[in-house]
Length: 420
Ligand code: EPU
View (cartoon, rainbow, N blue to C red):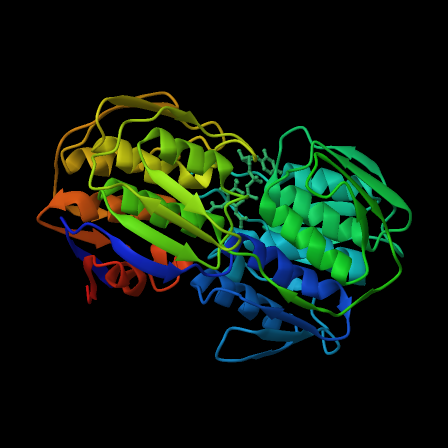
């Protein structure tokens, strides 16, 4: 198993391009199941999770072609199989996103029940209750969710008692082909949900309230294929900004957007970074300074994203002062703290809060990645640590960061992939 070897100490300095967003590419690929006629999706990142979603579509019979720039053409014409098998779902929970579109279009969907993962139990009860509210029958049999509907799903008024990104996405896709009006209340407002809705609109869906907590969808009989460019990855953007800030460096990130990163940019400014932005770029300059500690609490968009929590915990570990980080979305998402402490960090955990007393210097150690964003935090820690850090189980990082070592090398980091 490959590992990442990082020799700490280099101040990041340079320019890189940000990839398309994994978390909007995945639902948009699932949405291709709704289209009559070919769909062209571009700016998809070349990541394991995207490959898994393509494999899932292919195993259901979707015809897929792909070019060297990760532009994907899908055609659902030959589709005959309505099952998302355990073998694929177990490797990627986001496979649940095919449930809503498959049911809405074909009246039948069998999706292996996704289990919990390292960061929490991650139930899908809201996805299922929303589909039932639209008239589906849903049962769980031999580890599979089996959903059926007679004719089209029916529009419904549904209140989601927790803000859920995937739940909102599944239900919007289902509602797009339902008969009549669906109103989804307490919907997620994450930019990835907006990106999916814009793609659905381009396919002919009728959605209002995009970007707000109330989505109103007037179902249409058919959706057509379209060409759609996936938005930039805000979490990849944020991760490189934090990596540069932690090293006292400066970066310019191109092909990205500042408007979807406001809470993250504010925290970086609080940490002492100078940030400038254009329409499609963000630059950060730390001017060689050590960051100042920040306090933060994760919450649904537009508040601070859970997917950026681990990276800020790593930055706080070497910052000046004491910072508290509270995780409110997932019950076990502060796991990286134990590995950071092995590198000399001073972090005390109390429930869902980490109290981080910044130290001047972390020390390299062999560390183990436990999930995607925790891995990113270990890479950041490795960049600022004294000595050679070896990060194990980097298959987690390959799920969410396209060419991470090449991009960090471009910024001047001493990082390379070594065979395990
Ligand atoms: N929840 C329920 N019931 C449900 C669905 C969710 O109780 O039916 C709870 C979850 O247990 C969690 C909270 O609601 O406590 C939020 O979960 P959500 O459904 O929003 O998460 P998700 O859709 O499974 C997506 C991203 C995650 C990101 C979260 C939160 C994708 C593919 N994944 O997951 O991304 O952390 O939203 O923003 O979009 C990552 O990229 O590293 C990652 C984990």
